[in-house]
Image (cartoon, rainbow, N blue to C red; front, side):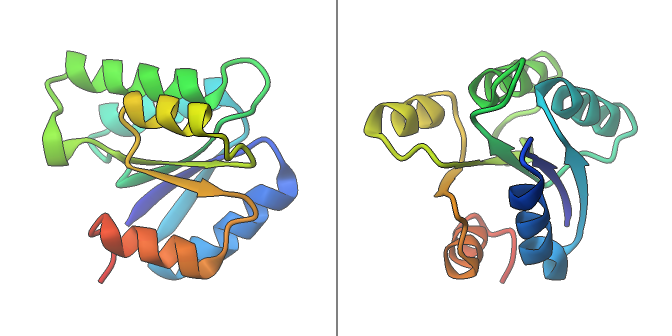
Length: 131
């Protein structure tokens, strides 16, 4: 499985990278601009990500905007349904408004930090990314 971690906090980034290591290869983006550049590069090389772990609170382009932009790029390229990248929001924000906004923008999952291995594995199984 090919994964992208988008996280501006070093400790959160390394923790998530450690937790997902058994399931495939991961790449890192430290902000929204890097995330969009990585997503576009993978798409252009015809090696898209299977899943993106996307922090919401980042400087510059925040995770909510990155999510919307990725869905827009996919729509422009006729990437639909199960062919779209799975996006899991990873954030310290657990208020209902933020969660609903993320799902309204079509994320597939939402994990509140600190991310536990049990919740991560459960969500990956629910999304049929692992068995």
